[in-house]
Image (cartoon, rainbow, N blue to C red):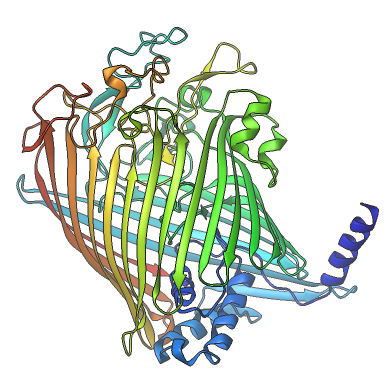
Length: 634
């Protein structure tokens, strides 16, 4: 151990005098992640870690590998547009001292007497989005907006340590409709320890639609904590959602350190992440759509074919019933660990486990060489555990297929495995193909199917020894948003998408997409149990061979289901290549939505036939939606 510590300290000391290189993260919505994924499909870079975001230094290294490898693989040659996009991205990371009007930032550096290079970077940006929706049948028009100004400071201390802090304020409006009410437990729930008659346990809550002016499941909360209504800016004016024009704030920051040429990478901070995704934005375990939270992560790469990563952080409550009441029963930490192995560019496999647990100093969940799922057996049954895995098969230059699974709870002895709520899991399969289209850049076709079973990402109330007489909530959520996939429980999705780019001074990116999303009704007279993140599964009798009728599931055939067919096209134009620090973007399309129902009683353990309905409770709608926006200093 003493020799290891000496070696470790010498390594750090030798690294510090070197030129600074930033290890702060590149946000997940940066187009470079899509570009890198397409380069992997071409075989131009090695299989990369599924723990994102990557640091600026790592992305620069990847781009350099792509450009150098391309010269050695004529069959995977980059088009002129693809080379230009990579070179422009690489150039955007280069800094010159002083103010740069094209990037909206200032940069300084100096070298200390001991030869350590220190840098300082500061800047600001602005983004505005306006979205409108027209519902044809009801002849109803609504609009929403999201406007944010953000400033940041950051820098490097030597070649190994980097830091960054950003803060911003925003004006937003995202109207949504009240669909009905629901309860935590279904009617007839029974448990010896839990009393459904108690309002602090069996909570009544309002079920809302997705924001009506944006495409379904695309609107992301950019504010931290709560929002303030336009006429209420005091601490007593905390609210959960901007139905009208409202104000919010956001703060993010990180500190990162790299050792042994990125073989060990440590980051602490509050930021958005995505782990264990077969393709960008598809993770079932920790999705890019999840809200940011503070956490400490460690990435360990002893060999190019083997990686391990761990992350532990503190989750944030959702303000449904006020700043004190809502948080009293949601005091959770989160831990996730993942191991990855790959064979060249042909096969990649990752697996891991995660835990949502009431706050305590639980070191075992943070250790990368232990399974959180099994470690719970050593410390007590108080936590919400899950396991996940992803397998990717790829042929460079052609494409890849992948499959992902997320297991919340499962009983392998179930007599009817796929028909019992007790078996809570999510699965995903997908195909992604690189399309060699002349003069276009990084063209791609993706087909993806995802299924989220009832009660996935939910968890029953838990009474712990360290919270006296309080039943704690442990859903797989952060600030009211799922940590996993963006769809709610008891849903499935078929997604078909085409992406491509074209460069002509600036970079023009465009896409076309179709989605079919089906989801069990969480509200109303035909509601299906386990269709919301606030649902809780009855723990009494769920392992019985027969089981209660309410503990059986028949997707589409056990109640009312909403079907959404979403067609949209869109694109963006980044004008920085024309020396204009602006990016504009637009999406437009149609959403056709309707419900199906069954002839019998919902949740009755009978598989009924389905038929289309159109009632005031479950209406048919057709919306035309247009979203436009711009970024200054993107």
